[in-house]
Length: 419
Ligand code: UD1
Image (tube, rainbow, N blue to C red):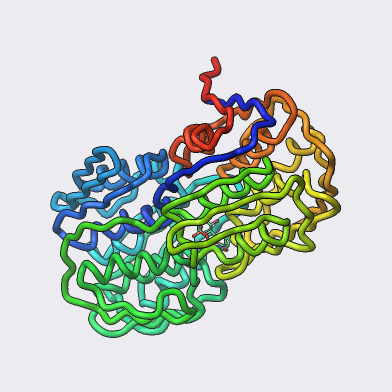
């Protein structure tokens, strides 16, 4: 079991290049089976979620090779339409395979996917979307059997703009003859990145980044070399860490245009942010101000994946902040440990009221999900004494050695192996 040992009280100061986005790379990895040719993904972050997705591709018959940040996927040997049960349970993003497998085999079987315990995370929207493409779906004792022999392009309307379901339908429809239109699509930047990747492979997709996406089916796709977009959540996490330590940092490889909501909140708290094309400089005040209200929403609203980190820094702000989590129903698991460190957070359903305190005390805490774990590490940086964040494996799902990023910015963070 890995843990982070953090000695708090050091001001972050320095420069760091942000990794590329896991949430862009994962659907792109799934999309790589839409061709029989090799795909080379450059600058892939070394994360357990990426490795698990690679294992899923291997089980389906692909050859997958990671060399530094270069990930090669050769789908020539693709032979199975059955998602491996154990791996699918480890990784929520395994559900992305459904669309591409259907596109290639016209049939697919999957079990319900796993992932971080941040809510129920059902897949009904994915399945409803596929049904609108005329896929017939049966649930046989927890195994979902999809028959896509009569798949047709057409209109797909989502009751809610799910990121994963939007991406799944884009991939399911890309090889269907005719036009598919997704209505009420999610607008996240990673969906634009998937569109860019697919179009580079020869697809004809337009509209990603808006709520209507049009997919003009093509006969075949070809292999490409592609670099997934930079990670807006990792950039935001490091900015939050700098903000709460009165830091002054420069980040490069930042998707600045996609981070308006995050930057606006940090500015509301008193940070000065200078933006350049793919770079930001953040200068934090001696003490942060509270924000009046932070509501998580689908993009371009405030991202749920930054909620925990913002709550961590609000614990030390002047006055009271309010957070409303609208996207996932169970995403306050970090609040208990923050309170044990001395924070004053009151939870009521999806709302958290955070009364700012003068200081936090380091102690032993436990990551319970990816972003909540990062939030505890941030709190540790600002706390008095030492903080031990156990179950760092959760953090490793989305951050390529967060301890190295924080150390190179002047933090004192060590990874230790617990018995
Ligand atoms: C993606 C991101 C995740 C982020 C989330 C919201 C990836 C790999 N993951 O997850 O980091 O937190 O977007 O920005 O890109 N829902 C249903 N039925 C469904 C699908 C979703 O009810 O079939 C619900 C979910 O339980 C959740 C909400 O819709 O409450 C949003 O989920 P969704 O947008 O699908 O998120 P993911 O694609 O799982």
